[in-house]
Amino acid sequence: MSSDYSTLLLGAGFTALVLVYLSQQGKRKSPAPLPPGPKGLPLLGNVADLPQTQPWVTFAEFGRKYGGITYLTALGKHIIVLNDPKYATEMLDKKSRIYSDRPTLVMAGQLVGWDKGPALIPFSQQWSEYRRLFAQLMGTRSKIDDFNDLFHEETHTFLRNLLETPNSWLDHCRRYAGALVLRVAFGYKVKVKEDPLVKLVDEAMDNFSETTASNAFMVDVFPSLQYVPAWFPGAEWKRKATKYHKTLAEMLEVPFAWVKQQMVAGTADSCFVSKQLENKSMTPEEELTIKWTAGGIYSGGADTTVAHMECFFMAMALHVDAQQKAQAEMESVLGVGVLPTLADRGRLPYFEAMFTEVYRCYTLGPTGLPHVCTQDDVHDGYFIPKGSIIFTNVWQFLRDPKTYSDPDKFSPERFMESPSHEKEKDPKNYVFGFGRRACPGMHFADASLWILLASLVAGFDIRPPVKDGQTVLPSGKFADGSISHPEHFDCVITPRQGTLQSIIRS
Ligand code: HEM
Image 1 (tube, protein in one colour):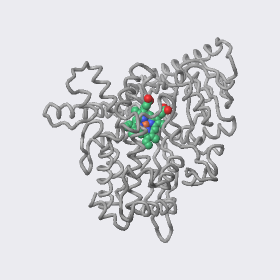
Image 2: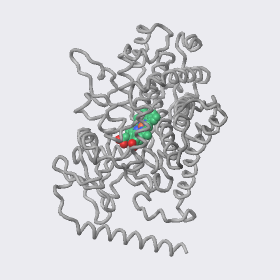
Image 3: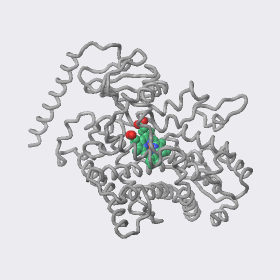
Image 4: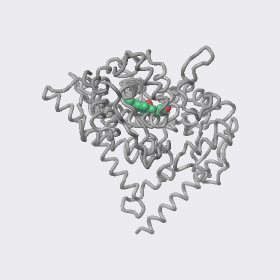
């Protein structure tokens, strides 16, 4: 049986390769040359050149060899890697009408089921509907003001938790991110410890990040592998897909059903879902749109926020001098032991610059999410075939010496204006993505992170631990995944003078 199956698969694979080859032979002449790139093998193309881990490093090497735009092909798929931000701006921002589709991801999309949600759904009417709902809720800075009380309240819970158990700082970060998005989407108040919904969201998002990491699953390279049965030797990934699909279904259904129950009982807090359902009878399709948009709020917002908080803790452990400068600024502007509020944002220029430098130096989305081009295009004299998958190497954009002076140095000062120095480009232009697919939660993320991290710096000292007389610094390395977390590190967190009083007062 198994050998029959392998033969069938090999046969299907071979036939697919021949079809790809024949279709390539019959192609019309390109209107311009393809961008430069590594020479591929016949039929397979550059399959062997595509990195399975830390793709941003290999992509940057392509950039050094071939310039800001590189072309690769894998089994007939066209792949474009952008290492120069000017291409991302010119193509994905300015020509967003044709550069806003997503690739078909077999593992994350078709098998696990994320292809119906806002982040992976094709550029379509249904996608516009999701974006309309996001824009209504959090599309502008002024709409974010509606969430200020929530941000402050949850920040103070975070600080109290940190004061009590500083070594569990990562759990407190997860709780903060989960609490915000679950309140906004479902009016759900997170329990202090081990909340089951936070756990569910975290699990679903770990799965999302793992399955959308570029080139992580062979089934995305060889789609015919999806027909391998789960019992097939070596088909561990197929069993994973089934398990992850179940987690995703729970992530969509469980909190939604909870809001409905609360509404029936008359105890629902006002939130995105309750406002949508209020006094309306909905078709199952309309309900599904609401479930997925709510799902997009917490799936888009939870793990990204946690990863950024980890980056910030890491930056503080690595750059104690900058941390102390920000603390001195806070003490002189706000007073000793006074916690900042969002209203203070314009009064803390050094902290703002340090906050911005963390976005630049330690990015959680080093290769963003890929876009797909829906029409043939000729850009900068290069042919971009319809269907090309476009990767933006944001990690490299943020290290481009044409944009950032001395890019390997952690230097908040680069974002401070002085008569002799112009502010360098805001990394938020890159880290939240491009064009019509740019992150709809960017204002929400930025404000919720600012208040939490400013309060953290005001209230606590963060230091690398000392073991056997040696300071143990974080490695500064990042794990694989489309949402990339720093490798595990320890830090020592101690309250600053007046912290206890200011937290009790808050
Ligand atoms: C530091 C925090 C965050 C970062 C760095 C981030 C970054 C990104 C990036 C790079 C993309 C892909 C953009 C593109 O394709 O060009 C994206 C998409 C998305 N983000 Fe965020 N994000 C963050 C927080 C959030 C939050 C808080 C929410 C919701 C509350 C959210 C919801 C989404 C959604 C729904 C999409 C899919 C948009 C689409 O495909 O049309 N994100 N984000």
